[in-house]
Every structure is written in structure tokens, then in C-alpha cells.
Length: 285
Ligand SMILES: COCCOc1ccc2cc1OCC(=O)N(C)CCCNCc1c[nH]c3ncnc(c13)N2
Image 1 (spheres, rainbow, N blue to C red):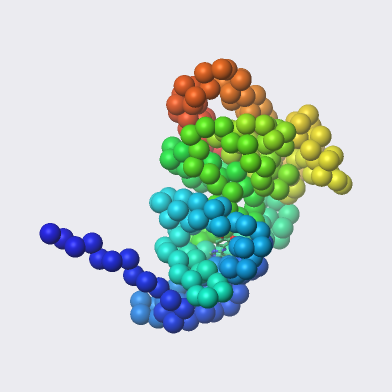
Image 2 (image 1 turned 90 degrees about the horizontal axis):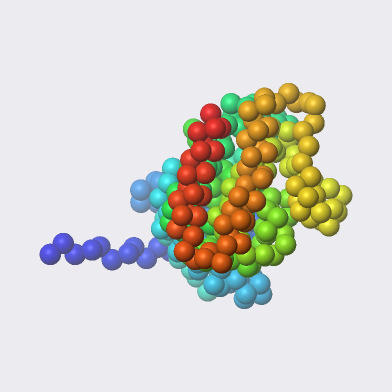
């Protein structure tokens, strides 16, 4: 019978390390070339002592299992991993044009067409994740990358969870968190939908809608959904309606969550959430 080839055991000697691509909370990312195939990848190095110190074994293992299982054009591939005495190495798809964040900061804000393209890619990637019961929970511009064709890739599923029930873990930077997250309440797929609205606002205006001097002020603004549209740059009514509709989104889902048969409703919740996401994708063209 066809024998499955044993998983190749990679090691550092299989790669030639290139320039650093950036430094994250738990590790650095480098461009690298696999010597045999000459294939260009990104290598993320995470020091084991950091994993011990921040006790992120489970989170990292869950993230690696999730990202390895996901296959979508807008989700950065995790091809495999290996480790030596002090480091873990993630072998990742390389995004040649780097972080969307830099493009946003360089241009100040994006055109509606560009914003709509990225939001549609994000929506499709998140709808795919939700169909596989994965909630990302930490979508922010730093984790959005662009490949050599300018196609959006979501990286860093550090806070993602395989979810069949309510989640209670507090995570993510405050700016992008939905009300039920900042209230540390049970949350579900809708939190990623909410973040789409926040990102859409940031793509079009150059800053997230609830930015404030202090975290507690941002917290209050999120809870009040205290969102307003500056007079410049000029943004179409359709785009504003999309943002308003999605940031009122948690209300829709929260009603379903509040119902005592939450578990049962989860299935329609999922299909509602996926329907909702596809609807957003349709709207954002
Ligand atoms: C536990 O970790 C899970 C995987 O997390 C990541 C995978 C790939 C990443 C970044 C990831 O996490 C975020 C992070 O480390 N930074 C914000 C610093 C580096 C920014 N990368 C910039 C970059 C430029 N071209 C790239 N092509 C592929 N991957 C890249 C980059 N970065």
C-alpha cells in the first residue's frame, strides 16, 4: 500500500537565514531560503525561555495546530516547525510586501477600493475560520501581511481558539476588542466580525474609531460604541453604513447568546455568522 512519507524532520542546517523581518512579543522573524529547493520562507524564532517565562506552551501549541490545519489564500501558511536546545522555529509562508500596517502609516489612509479589497479578503478568511470553529480574536494591522502580489495574509493566530462554546479569555489589544470582550463576557464568532468594522474604519480614516488617551477611555468608548465619522477624508455613505452595521453586530449576536439555548443556537449562530460574513464581503465591494 502507498506508504505515507514520514514527516520530514527539519533543522537549522536546512536553511540559509536572511534579513530580519521584524520583532514580535515572543520572537523574531527572518526571511530564509531552504537550501535544497531554494524555496523562500519566513522563519519565526521563539526562545524556549520566553515560553517558560510567559507560560504560553498551550497557547503556542494550539496556535501551531490551528495554523497548520488552515488552508486559505488569505491565511499565512505554517508549513512546519523544528526546535533546538533553546529555540522553536516556525517555517512560514513568506509575505514579500510585509505588514499592511506600514502601508497604512505611509499613506495615512487607504482608498475605498483598497479598503474594500482587504476587508473582503479578511471576511472570506474569517468566514473560513468560523466554518472550522476557529475564532482569531486578535486581528489587528500588525498581523495583516501582504504577499508579493499585494494579497492580504493573516498571520499570528496567537489568540485564536477552536471554539464550540462561549470563550472567556481576555486577549488582544483594546482598540479592536468588541464590547463583550472588553467586559470579559462570554463571546463568540461575532468578536471577529466586530473587528472587521474597526479595521474598515481604520483603513478609511487612518486610525481606529475608539482611540483615546488612556485604555480606560478606550474601554468606555467601546462600551458606548461611541463612534463618529470625521468630515475628512471623504468616505461614502455605503462604507459608513457597513461600519455602523458591523459595530452594531454584537447586539445581534448577543441576543442569541443571551438565549438560554445558546449551545443549540450555536449551529445557527455559526451559519448566521458565516452568512453575516459573506454578506459583509458582498457589501464591501
Ligand atoms: C507565535 O507566532 C505565530 C506566527 O506569528 C507570525 C508569523 C509571521 C510573521 C509574524 C508573526 O507574528 C507577529 C510577529 O512576530 N511580529 C509582529 C513581528 C514580525 C513581523 N513580521 C513581518 C513579516 C514580513 N514578511 C513576513 N512574511 C511572513 N511572516 C511575517 C512577515 N511575519
